[in-house]
Image 1 (spheres, rainbow, N blue to C red):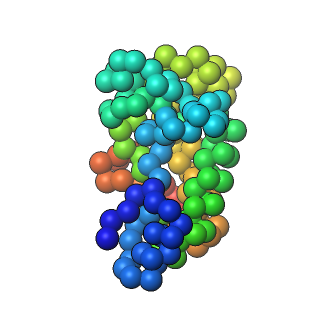
Image 2: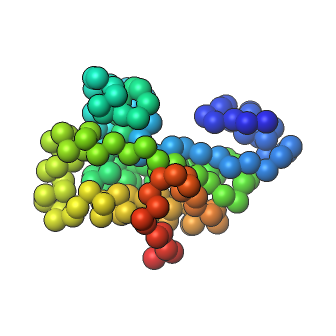
Length: 154
């Protein structure tokens, strides 16, 4: 049984039947969040989508924003509490740097914090993973994404 973003009932069925790796793919593939929390999404539904995303629709979390990092860590932790799997994937692949280069809010946050995009991404993922570790989960990053980062418990 394979299940991405399914209902709580599906997650409970999977908990009973087989081990699995729950995944919330961040920071890319998050355009849908713009419907309820547009302040957290850069390049929401920008076109042409091939310029702003590896897969449409365009939209990814504003990784340089501390408010977005907190929002995302809370979201992931809330979902992680519902599953018994000891591991939880935060995605990490298909980041679109063109989107961030053209997003005024991201550029402003980077400039005011003195961080690079790579540093902001590292901080963002470490925040996600800290919340998972508090729950006793092992954070996972997709194999194809972010190979230059080493994520520690610090």
